[in-house]
Image (cartoon, rainbow, N blue to C red; front, side):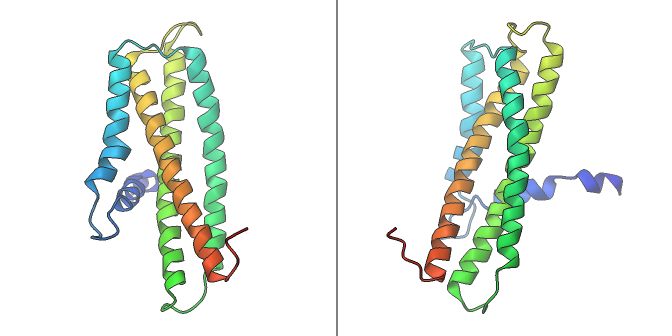
Length: 180
C-alpha cells in the first residue's frame, strides 16, 4: 500500500515505548505528562495570555528546525555505526545495555526528526498565511509551534541523557578511566 511508505505510526509508538519506568517496565505516567502534557499546557497558556509570535521569530524557528533535521539524521548514522560495532556475548550485561540504549536513542531521534519536520511544515504554512514580518502569526500555528518546540527540546534532553549513559557504558565496557 502506498501510504505505508509514509506511515510514521511506528516511529511514534517506538518513542512512546521509551517512556517507561525501568523498574516496572510499564509506561510512566510522569514521563507522558512531562513530554506531552506540559508542552501542550505551556503552549495553551502562552497563546491564551496573548503572547504574539511574530513572523520573524517563525523564520528563525524554520531555519533552526531545518538545520536540526539534517544534524539529527547524521546522529542516526552515528547510532547505526555504533550498532554495527556491537559484538559480543548475549550474556554480556554491558552489551545488553548498549543495545537497549541504541534502540531507545534511535526511537527518540526518529521522533525528534518527525517533530522537527512537522514544525518546519507548520512554520512554512504560517509564513505563507502572514502578510508582514512584523505581524503575529495565527493562534493555532503559534500553539503548534510552541508545543512542538517544547516537545522537541524535551526529547533532545532525553536523547542527550541516553547518549551520555551510552558513552559511560562504553567507558565501563572498555575499562577506560572515567576520572579524566
